[in-house]
Structures are given as C-alpha cells and as structure tokens.
Image (cartoon, rainbow, N blue to C red):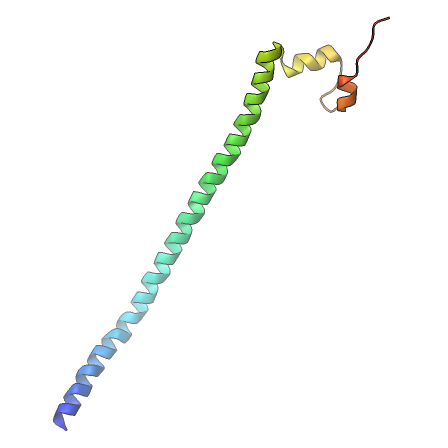
Length: 99
C-alpha cells in the first residue's frame, strides 16, 4: 500500500508541474501567433505600398514616353488644341478643316 501512495504522490507532483506550466505554454503560443500575424500584416502593407508606387511610376513613365515621342508635353498640347483637361475625347480628336 505504501508503494501505491508513493506512486500516486510522484504522479501528482508531475501532474501539478504540468498544470503550473500549461498557462505559460498557452501564453507563449499566443505570443507566437500574434507575432506571426504582425509579420504577415507588415509584409502585406509593404507589398501594397510597393504596388501603389509601381502603378504611379508606370503612369508617369507612359506620360514621359508620349512626351519623348511627340516632343511636346500634355499641357502644351492642351493649349495648342484649345481644350480643357476635362473635355470629352470627341472634342479633342475632332479635326477642324481650314477653308
């Protein structure tokens, strides 16, 4: 009977140490999960900013290509054609014949 009590006592000691350590395991898991979520969101924001920057650069480069091809800027073309930036495309592209 004494051996049974010693076995039960040693099992209780090991079980109680597991119970004491379990909240720390949960806390470390919780912190690890939040750290990974933080990393994922940070990289997502970096990639989103890079995509926005890339889109802005491509628009700027296309305007520069048109300027290099034609030799005049968009503002100069608007002044020559005597139209506004908000004018419909039909008004910009209509051909005025000289009589």
